[in-house]
Image 1 (cartoon, one colour):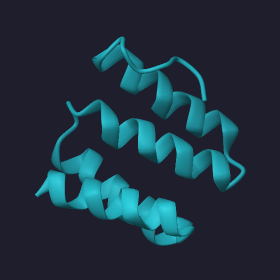
Image 2: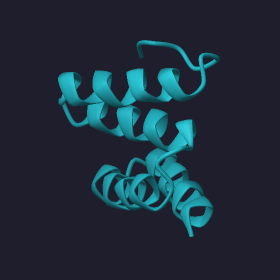
Image 3: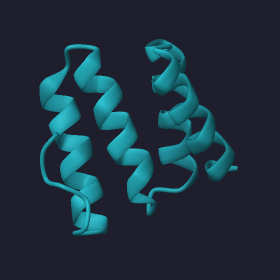
Image 4: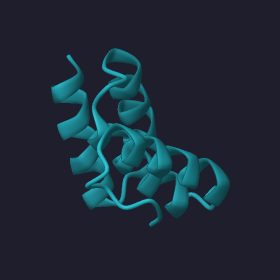
Amino acid sequence: RADIHRALGAAHLMAGNLEEAQVVLQTAVSLDSAHPLSYFLLGQVLQAHGQPLRAAEMVRQAHRIDPRYPQTL
């Protein structure tokens, strides 16, 4: 269930568990590719992991799905 993975990913992100957050959020994206929050959170994780290009791609995808999300971090 994507919503559970999304919530767990957000919790891991807030706790600083970046590896766990990335795995769980990638699962959330694969389960529900139409939910912008999963992409946005994954972008934050990737940015923190020093992967700015992949992070930007995720954030732009969140913005494409829902323009209320910013285009950049």
